[in-house]
Length: 405
Image (cartoon, rainbow, N blue to C red; front, top):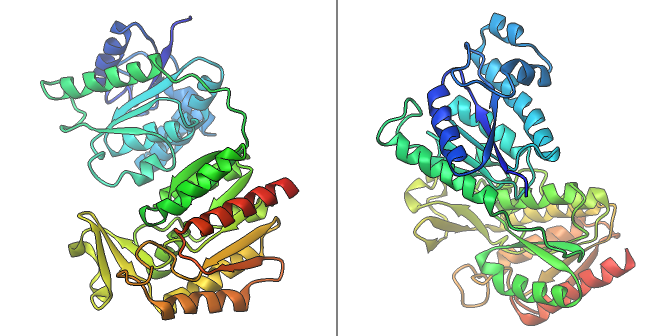
């Protein structure tokens, strides 16, 4: 087996000694390294294998132009674009098998741009001063391991030495022990799930797997919905079991887990068979209670756990969601069915549970019926979304749609 190589991406002009330390640690573990310099401020303190001029050219500019402009923000954007072109090419050509980077805000922007351009499964480690905060803009929908640097990435000292060494060992371990690709060639199904729809999705998944499909389950937390639709867009998914469309509740009502206004559109545009359900549309997601906007102070809340607080959607919000979902499904180019569980859309919307609200649920289905095109089948079942009969029905409907596609 040939030597495996880690790509080291970053600003070698300002972080040269730090990257040199990481390079030395990786090579001491028996791996090769390939250094990509994305710094434009001056001469690199660590000799790169790919220079900043090549990175700038990959972004459609030149190093001299960026230096002459003197716009740091524009330079960071350009170099991020450049590494996002170069690094996936290096991986595709077998030159590198993983990527590591270090940095503050600019370094993290550049390093993670390269990582997001790589496929899922390629090892990615980002040591960042920002890793203890909101990393969604940097991680996106990729499997990037974010490690907090504790101290700034400014010198190799008794603290950073430990952090950098751990990061080097982490990427080395990932690259040396990558899981082999399986021989599984079953058609892929994408499903969406929340804790309050888990029984439904679990039973439906098992039924689909018994029928010869492999099911990828995505946690409907905003990023999960986007990750699923990225795979749909990429042509990997043959059918969608969109049980948990709760991200649209956050989009409509102003919660924290929206997947954006385009959620629930890509499968329809591509003509991929889809079964859609109103899973967890009874709830909007927030963090701990003290962070909930005061405008919602008179609403009904449920403490899901210490870090997640759920807010019950109102009849007005449900009516709006019915109209939105009807519009998205009516525009679908492929087969689509919407399944409505008359006894509740989540585990806590069942009769006797804290979010049970028949009037709010009725507002949704009435708006959906009024706006849904005739090309979309609406199936109403006298069940809660987590009942076995409901799970079996939606799985069988998708199997039938796939057979007919």
